[in-house]
Image (cartoon, rainbow, N blue to C red; front, side, top):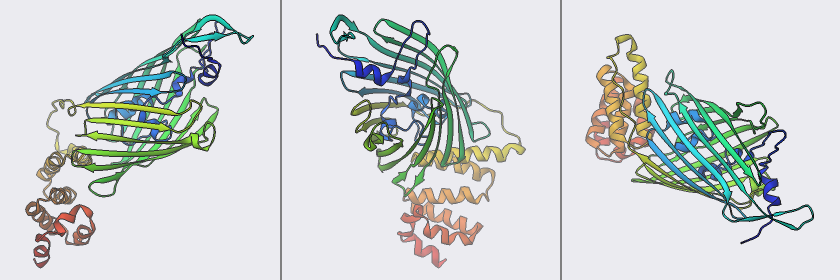
Length: 415
């Protein structure tokens, strides 16, 4: 049997149990279990680039996940401590998105108890923290708003004392623009007033900036009020480089105030995504109260959104509202580089309104991105017929680079 002293472990995790008061700090609930959070400097809420793991921080973010996903994470700590996290989500369009997760923290080796006299007592210390959750997010309300709830059951065991309880999180995500997202979540609200959980209020705002057709930048900022006692500010960013069906994601962030020294507030990591369905994330924090932190997450996607529920044909007064939904869906497909699907959505709008210049402009740019010069030229002519002043915008739009560098561009100017 391998013997270790666990005093420092107890201090760090503070899973302190008291049989007489039935209180618990349960601070393991504040630890980010998945790799992306660590690589962003321990970001408690990053609203951009969500996947199934967002339910741990803000359940409303599940409504922005557009496919079935399951994720596995292993978290390496010091002194044989480990943390495992598994999560899954099921989006059902027009009804909402359901999620579930399970996190477990424990020790892979036996630890001997040390008495007050510094001698081993002969007993072994058991250390085991667990939490399971069920989450739900509404579909978009008024085209911009999502609301989510996350119910949790947690249990803790430290040596001879055990404790368990119920809590819940609630959150809101607001899509201000297609590329600007704001979120706020209140975590670990207690059902039982006799417990003392690490209540936290997390806010975040993020923006997705498309630098060109293959590179995007996702900066975010978050502010958290932890245990209603102190604030933490996080700044982070994610670079996305697309190479055909493979994407490389580089992440970095910083949280202030740091846990220990300046370095402990840093985080960095990398992700590899294949076919928009399979992703491996690695997160590293160089120094913290937990020592060197290494997290590895695997996220697997299964297909597209669930089938759309059948709807009655909208009456004419609702056409404008439906157009907004179609524009949002088309923009999402475009960001995912699903250009053919985006084209179908924009064409739906042209079918309803043949002079919708925004839809026509997007169709022209997509054909240019796809390097289909013939159709790009045809739609550019149509756009300029509707508004000839857009020629300057087209010439300076990087989406039209393929067309401008083609033989069709001079021909268009002659006409």
